[in-house]
Amino acid sequence: ASWEAMAMMSKMTLRPYVYVVKNPKVYDGDSFTCDLNLGLFMEKKKVKVRLMGVDTPEKGFRAKSAREKQLALEAKALIVDLLNNAEQVLLYSENGTGKYGRLLSTVIAVQKDGSHLSAAEELIKHNLARPYFGGTKSKEPW
Image (cartoon, rainbow, N blue to C red; front, side):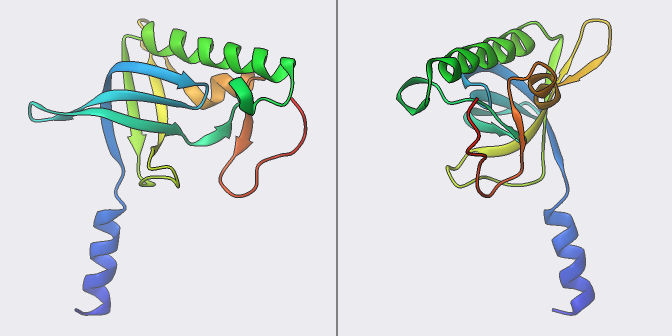
């Protein structure tokens, strides 16, 4: 194949996808499982999702302190509230899957008044997440 054809094919495969989230089940502040409405009356069940751009405190035995456990619970509660109280939740994905097989995504909660809230931005705004784009995570305590 010619260079131009390969370049065109790579652009096609990197195009972003937008899906409607249904039945979210939140695991922690930066990951959840949901069904995705793919359009044309098709649905993909039990898709594991990882929020792009943030890292939230660890819960359970992975937490390094009681404060981290508490912040992890707050981060999870914020995401549960955001996803369950939105008029519609959109998942924007163009980065494939991460090292644990989760779909790397930007998640947008469309509010009843038509405004849009980014799940990652809301977590950062409430000091429940740090910016993170792969690589080594911050060792700074929560």
